Length: 181
Image 1 (cartoon, rainbow, N blue to C red):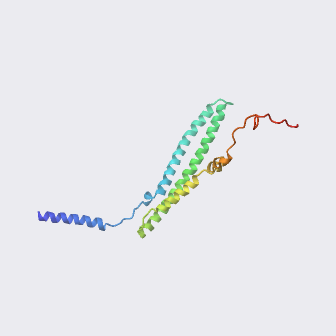
Image 2: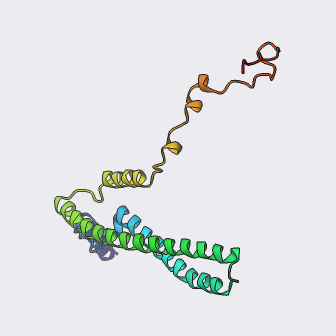
Image 3: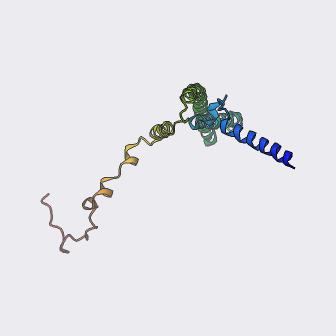
């Protein structure tokens, strides 16, 4: 009985010392912890999906265009749809490549930053860096149309509201004065 308690104490003590003195091991894939890398990868995946959808849609539109009767509104509509889809394909391809390159670049930057933070025993990833990324993203994606971002003068100042419609007969109900022409 006494011997089993001493073995149990030894095992518990060994486990506690392993947990307390356990070595800190460097993560081989720190980019998986990086929210910026995750966002860039998700954007790359979304644009790649859009690219594949557009690639699949173009042949059906081309076939519909060939089958449409000449000199009809259908031909014009299919041509517009096809041009729109090709533009969408080009934009999706460009953005897919862009986000793939950005994600690869971020993977390298994240690994270097992680190694520096690990060596200095600092927390990583830096939350301020992600907030800066989100701010930059929000500014890039904001609407640049001035009319939609700034309220109209009529909305800001009550005195600039259009006056109520006047009666047809003038201010006092009298007929308008004849002009000298």
